[in-house]
Length: 133
Image (cartoon, rainbow, N blue to C red; front, side, top):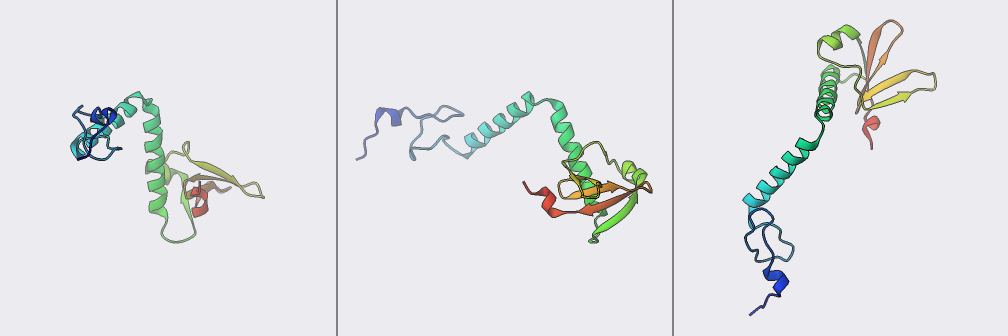
């Protein structure tokens, strides 16, 4: 018969407080308690996060989806600035900037980028390495 030390007998579920039996590193008595605990933790973290952070993340996601839709497998594509704006694209939000030796400045949303050309059109590009961390 295995005897538990007093510390092992005092282990409680972090969600409901029931006693725990089994693995020494066990934190919850079952999957329901684990899921409830993690759900509450996520909700709490969201509640203390300033709302503009979520809004900025959503704009960046939308920008990425719009650029992704324009990628038809070709390397580059020219579109009008107004066309992107009409689809909901915001030129204000991007994840990185790349400047070429010629001085051209590309703005990227992860792997999709754009360059404002002299003609007023927007050159869309894709560079997978730009999304590397």
